[in-house]
Image 1 (cartoon, rainbow, N blue to C red):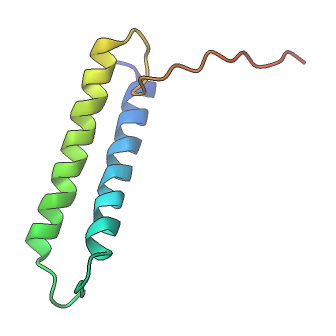
Image 2: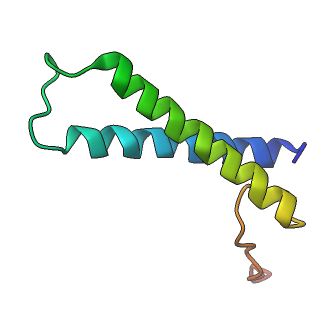
Length: 80
């Protein structure tokens, strides 16, 4: 959990979760940039990002890898 790779993965996933939330809310009927509740939208995005980060921490605690992913890539690269 204290590696640069873990935090890079976790932050990337958190930003992606925030972007997905924005797209999901923007995709709903009646969305307008002028009429949207910006505090509500930002709160939803922030919550999604915090939940994603908490998930990355939980996955790291449950696995022995140094990444934020529960899936560990076990495929070896071919040698040249």
